[in-house]
Length: 638
Image 1 (cartoon, rainbow, N blue to C red):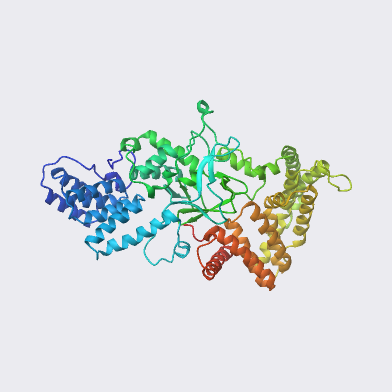
Image 2: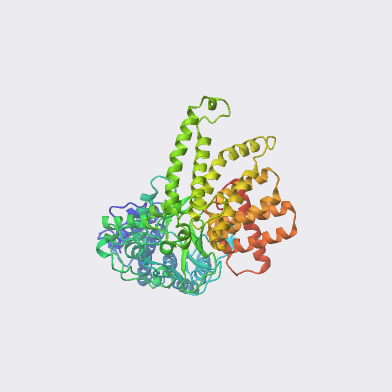
């Protein structure tokens, strides 16, 4: 496999030479020139000189080993492996070639082969410090890849006894398989799974910071990854979902000419490279460097790129997880490595779903986001909000027209030009919109005695509640801002108006006769109302009332977004509030919730003794509390 890419620059990799070129100079002096360039840090120039030396003497073991080191520095592990193997074959006493072979195998994820090579080296040179260190690293990576053994202290808090910084990929009790209802393929549980159990760990094939040009950077990263590793080339070219074939999600779109053909499910062996022995059926470099491959990489980016708070990346196995608006699995980024755990217990053959976007929003907003991904969500939560959605949308259009008229009148009113007046008309807009939505709700579902009949829909209740909350938000936010600015000298916002709205909303949920799960899903769709009430209650010093609201929020998150970072932050706030109130039973209940939620997201169902798990949970809670105080993102993400 030639390491050159003619049309896709990739740093020093682009300048690395073909492995065999004809030449007439003697090998040793040219190799020494290469050594000088290597010492100066010019690895591409050094590799060119080693290739010249090899043209004169293809069996020059030292030149082969040195060029292998250049390939290692460029992360072209397949080419490094070929040179290291050739070097050892040319001179079995050249022990450096064994170390370089081990490092190339390590880079390719073939940890058992790397360990066998290092053991062979240590039999010859038992005191080699680099080999000893590499052996420990390979053993660590092997245990991760085969058994999913990851040290929480080392990963989450960066407390490592060694300089190991990598994580091996891991595939747990999941498989890619067809999913019911003609929705294409997805990831399903291969057996019963406990909450918090590790489903997979995946390093990105390409990753880029959230910034203009991120998409092109990902495409270039995929091409570079494919050029370095045949297994990655196969993933990009043949395995990963591509936009021109279908869009990832709960519904997959196929080419028109292939609409009836079932989508193939990839072999899980493709994601378990630690079991590989090398793949002879690889893409030629010319194919990887082609425009067709670049276009395919662009399609993969459009379909598979997963965005986080600070970065966006393409992750092989996670690309096959479908979306759910009440997901049963959660993603955590440790650096740029993605860990996916079960957010609740899973049955064998149950589909595993993650969230692609914010699920703490009403169904119309979630469907709009799903449309951007190329699918229509038909999950149970969306189905529960679907009845009455069309009538609610029509009512919202009418309310919007009335609200715009109200805003125009308010802006034209001279009285609003005075200080404190509604000069931009936003207060009038919000009040008119909320009044129109409530009137539509009453007409649709309530008689003059406020008894609810069967025509009242959950969609209408959620939409009306959000409209009423939005009408209140401006005044509440302004009062809260002023209260904070004056450090409590000004009056706090009135928490009663939000408490009354919550009571109004929950009374209508009661009238609809929802089961417990659907009730909590509905509360998740207006969770910002509960969050605003929490802020107001703090300002008013009503900590006991706030505790009840925090518990209500936590229950909604448990149903709609379990083991998410948002869920973790809320149970952390619950514990802080319980300690401030000073009720022992509340503290114990909050700590039990913290132990369960944080373990599900970060630690798993087992793995450490009780004392150690308690310490880890406590530190994780402290990190979440810090995120609350600083309004920052998740502490372990790069």
